[in-house]
Structures are given as C-alpha cells and as structure tokens.
Image (tube, rainbow, N blue to C red; front, top):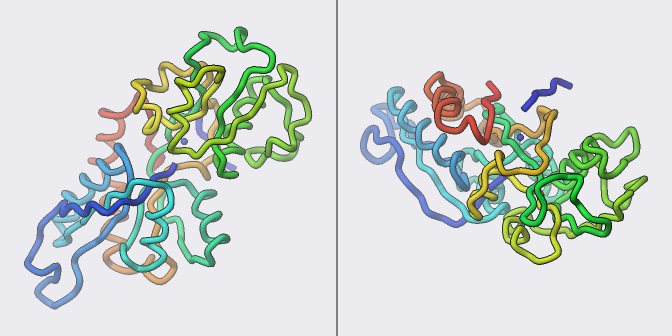
Length: 273
C-alpha cells in the first residue's frame, strides 16, 4: 500500500450554487445534459469544486455545487441520483456507507490528503498528558481507527500488530496512561476542545478551524497516511464512465487545482494527484 508523508468527510444541507455558466437550460446544442451537480461540505473541498467549475466551463459544462451541512447527506444525495458526484470523503467512509445502505458509490480520484491529528487546550506536549486523561475521538469506525493508529504510533497506546488503521477502543492491548476515550461525532469534535477535562481532541483541519486552530497547533500530527484516506471525488457505478463525470474528473485533477492546493492550502493538506 502506497503511503504518503505528511488525510472527512463532509455533507449535506441544500444550498445549490451555479459555478460555471454555459448555455441555457443546462443542455448543449445537441440537447445533451451539460450540468454537473456535485455535493460537498466545507472549504477547501467546496473551493475545489468551484474552481473545477471554472475549468469545466471551457468544455461547455456547468458545475453546480450542492453544499451540505453534515456527513450523511452528500452520500444520500449521490446514491439517490440527486447529484452526479460528491467531494467530501475518503474511501473507507464511502465503503462503510455502501455496506450500510446497499449503495454503489465508487471512488474516482484522490484529490488531497488532509493533515489530521490531535489538539490540546490544556497541554503543550505529549509528556504532559496526565494519567486518566480523556481523549475525544470520532464515533464512526473508519475515522476512529485512524485516530487510534496515530496514538499507537506515538506510543500512547498499543494496538494489535495486525489491525493497522482499523483498530477499535475495545482492542487496545496496552494503555499505560489509562486514557479514557470519549467517542464524538466527527463534526462535533472541535466543541470538545474547550471542554474541561479533555486532554486530547482528534480533528481534521476543516473542522478544527472553527475554534481558530490549524495543524501547526496540533500536539500530535499523523506522520504516515494510508492512501485510502485521501479526500476523493466519488460517483456511482452507473455514471462513472459518463462524459460529464470525465469532464469533472479532468477539471478536479488539473494543474490549476493542484497549484491552488499547493499555494493556498499547503498548511493543511497535500495534493494527491
């Protein structure tokens, strides 16, 4: 498995924004559908969709951003055929949705790796973490396994040798500090940062930004990233080979998007294409 050195997901509400205009009524001269609806969540994901819309306009397509507010709706919208693609998640999260809902979503292209890690309001160094400290981690299993792997690699806990990024709290072999794990919805983890008694909080840069933090403020950052955690463009089995999706894919992996990620967001992510 390829790894990158320094990897949400996002979703639903229903604000639809036209990002690139081309022709009236969303169809080209031949009557074909030229509107590409893409569900996404927070910046920089939404920013990438917006930029991709500008690029796709040169090929005669309009990209519409359907901006959501949670980590459920972007996949529901795509599975139900209300949008053509989404850009908000990594592969394990998509696979978990497919298994839970009998959906047929497919990963098309990895776009960037977010710099994830743990933050602490009370402590400046891992050596200061007290015995019995509380660690807030995601309650969904795909992101929880990733959070536990970071703690394992830092020596704060020990997981079984073969679990990789799929460990569970119940599988912890050794917990020398007797850390207490508090499982929180991914979107609500930034709120735990200000809670009394919370020693460590796991988060993505898009979420922790809500409390004024960036990866530079993390007490512990992920060092090795499994490529499955790359934030990716996702479509359905039945439309993945359509012309619209190929146009979108080319736009999302263009030099303009890569330059945008490198120049505007290097503090929080790494391009993956």
